Image 1: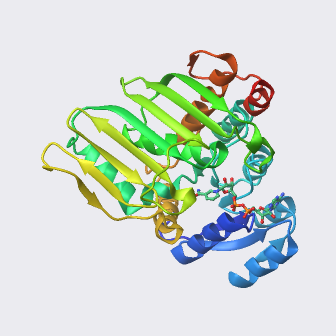
Image 2: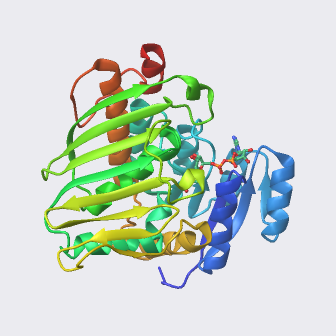
Length: 342
Ligand SMILES: NC(=O)c1ccc[n+]([C@@H]2O[C@H](COP(=O)([O-])OP(=O)(O)OC[C@H]3O[C@@H](n4cnc5c(N)ncnc54)[C@H](O)[C@@H]3O)[C@@H](O)[C@H]2O)c1
């Protein structure tokens, strides 16, 4: 394969995230957008016009069977995952790019992983906030050893679980080089958000024991700490690490700050989650992985599965009351079990 060849891509779901993806693919220069799909004809037409009128379809199946894209990207709401993965595998895509969370239950996620592993299809999941300059800076400070030995990582978001929790787990695991989790303990409250299109308990919290000894602490939803420095409600996330000689943390909508061994006080800098800034490098690393199988994308599906598994283990703990050991086996779908129990 010549490094300069173009990869064909189809994007299914022309809502907010589908448009971000289509835009980033087109602007990258190494992709040819050969198809768009949405069940909403107006959205589909508008997107097709915006991106130079590629093939447009109200149904994903016929579109991908006709176009057989190298990259199958879908950006639908969380209720639509396994069916789309199946389609991507069947049409022979080399890479499937999709949105978090990867599934709505452990059973579904296990099925997805089985399918893509067997077919040898690369998967990439959109935990792209990490490309923000403030996220990168916090990661660099931690990796430099400037806060000493990390013993705790933490993440909070006022947004609810199916929107936000895998983001928190993904970035905190990144801070500790994707350590494996051994067990979690969790608790949850409130059923109001189960009727949302990101069905979730209103509030959920979890403690995570990582194999390297680090403790993870996460909270998401109503009752998670406010981040008063940040105005934008969805960006009220504080994600960081504490070590033996300091701490470093990112505020999704409000820069970063740290105290390190040598900083002599608080140091801080700018940064704000910005799709236009974060999508290009996210998509460029897909090119890297397609060109060279050794350049595994940092947002690869195996990592996303580990984060999702931690989230589902927290749900199981809230239902079963106790420590949940990982890895998880199939079981009662977690959201249903939680809704029944709370
Ligand atoms: N990574 C991030 O920063 C981030 C930010 C926002 C949302 N998300 C995630 O992205 C996903 C999509 O969110 P969104 O805000 O773009 O939603 P959205 O509602 O704006 O878009 C979803 C689109 O999918 C279409 N759709 C539904 N069923 C379809 C089908 N069978 N075939 C084709 N199209 C179909 C809908 O008509 C809609 O246009 C969610 O999982 C969400 O959690 C991620």
